[in-house]
Length: 359
Image 1 (tube, rainbow, N blue to C red):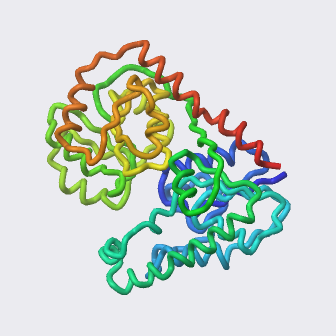
Image 2 (cartoon, helix red, strand yellow; image 1 turned 30 degrees about the horizontal axis):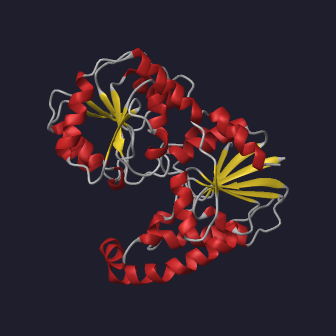
Image 3 (cartoon, rainbow, N blue to C red; image 1 turned 30 degrees about the vertical axis):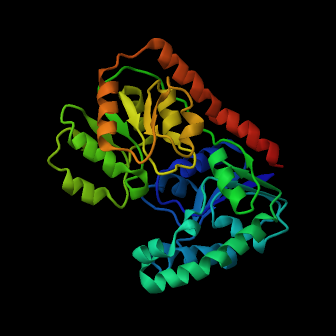
């Protein structure tokens, strides 16, 4: 049977996007559809027809969240009902409210709609007084439709215990199936001394803390991979730091080479739902400097895999950890242990488990 993967939007080369593209390549007769895709970042899958988008420029609207909500609730149509419909965002499941006769529907939550937990003060700071009032009125409407839509699915899955627990608190029950990570090409090939950051350049990834730490550690190199809303401000603020390189988005094969050659991964997201990057680092035999929050508690679950700090994370603590790892000699037993640990999340394991829910 054909499979259609439906994900909210493709605007960054993040974990959910990677998993979706890998699934489309691994499942027979599988394609991906989305409201909007960045035509530069996703040129290859768009040109091949693997990925189809509807050019819905939701971010140009006064209320982008409402725009995505209405797109999936009212505009998107499932043309072929005889499919496995795999919906993997927090807005795309809304299609099930109208399309209840799909042969098989599977909701797979990569993330949680964290905007529903924002206080009025936080909303006002982000959107102004009127925007905050509208947003607070919108949240219960969104939640009602989300619960009604998800209740129509044949199966409801979450990509981590962290995500499962958050949905459980709002009354949505899920089963955990860890996402698959493409481990091919990841192998310890030495240590060229630089530390690596692969998180999107966004406030919730705490990349500003990472960059500032290395700005104060002139003798240690940092390679920043990725883009985001903070990219230009970081480039301007730290242009004088010769030890920090902003490399933008990289081809997947080049990114793997950088994992293979780095000293360690620095990954400090705010309550990451799962986190593909730490698994990729482990597969390359490299330790992870992270935070004791979210999905990292499920992947970096042994001291041989890395160091997780409690939050709020002090910059002096982070700097000392960087110094410690810079001075640490690679231990072949630890390298092998990290690589073995990463196999728990190999894509082959994921696809085998996911197929149990597909027809």
